[in-house]
Length: 275
Image 1 (spheres, rainbow, N blue to C red):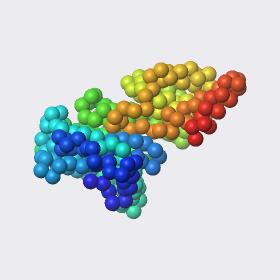
Image 2 (tube, rainbow, N blue to C red):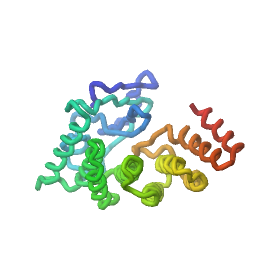
Image 3 (cartoon, rainbow, N blue to C red):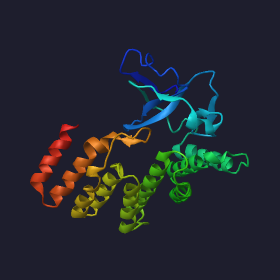
């Protein structure tokens, strides 16, 4: 299953030729317009007890969610689905669309029949919907409620909730000065501390410090993920540009402003080679 405006791209003549025959639920790699990658369930055997779950951002899984741990799932390799969905598909404006989404989720959260295993997912998407609608305080509140569920739910929801909180604070600091420098620095470091293989929060923090002319601090923080970052963690979303180009480019910019010009040139050349 894929949206009508998505593109299916295969690296081989028949990516289904060698799929795992014992599996009944299959994941595919998706790519967003900004290069972000993630894995998603998109195909299943017709006789398997698999249905869509959720009132919005639906996902395929076993009718009994408990069966997912013992189910037979597999990844379809050598192909990709380019997601082309429009945020205004169900409304004339992006903000209206995401407010509609938030209202649907809020209604679902009040349903006494709600499967509590969906609660972390709903709270995450509530936070995301408010963020996209521009209601940032409500977004942070929903994300914090999601984080209270800890490891319950999808692993990437915790990462994205933490990072979105930091990104929102950074944005509001720039436009409205609602959050101080220390708050923003700590927020990004909290993301990295919990997810030390991720470089994206470090890239955003370096950008923030660069514009605050705190170049040496940015360079020191840049050393944190150099031995821990990994650009492949299964279904967790990754921004490829941050790993291949943005990190060394940001590093070079801070280095030249800090007076390490020769080192900055070498780092910039490394970044340019990856364009």
